[in-house]
Length: 325
Image 1 (cartoon, rainbow, N blue to C red):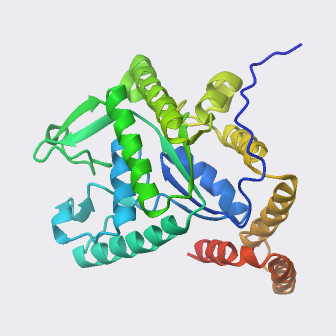
Image 2 (image 1 turned 120 degrees about the horizontal axis):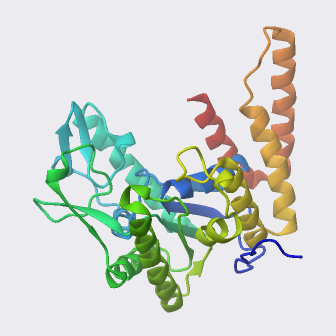
């Protein structure tokens, strides 16, 4: 007896491994999957300009990365004591304009270089609703708490969404024609638009992504469908009833691994995750001898794994730097 509908992603076993260079752009759901990959020491970059929700903003940011064009003071504005950029999430905002520009341009250069060498690029679309700045018509990635009167809010048509997705892929393939590209629609529900508005938005993205995949050879990964059709229960949502709960994210990542990883990659992933859990561990004791022994054992495990798999070193160092911050 089958008591649920199972969604079967396209099987590409062995496509992604620890030698892959992965970049993810898009919604907060892509950050969740990126977190799972980081804990397993995959070499990757996720949302260098912060979370992106709509196809137009993803296309615009992919253009920044492809051209490595420097940001200037004209790209910034000041609001509530901070300098912001409409192409970036507020997590990149700063109190000093020069500091922000230096950081933005460093991110652009580093992530642009990574994109050129990437083996796999994931684009995750969250909504077809966009905000356009009244003064210029620019689609913004983030409104940075400016008054709603500063923007025009509207929903992209299927044709517009398709055009923006195509532009993003064109930007990527201009500098990296061999990268494999994957499209997915975020299962995060945007209920501020109402249930009907959210469904219209997701439908727009699904229709556009299907057409773009057919035209470009990009692969569609059904993260949205897995949550909607397999995990049809509110226990798989977080307290806000919009975002998938950690259990749902773990399940989707399992399906992701089943679709893209070989058996060997899965086994190495499990070893890597055990190590990163130890590296991120915070001691619950004041016993200095026990703490030092744990650190020493962790170092030995890390060194042995690094010696066996030298390709893990960049991801190891990046993970260690992040937990130290």
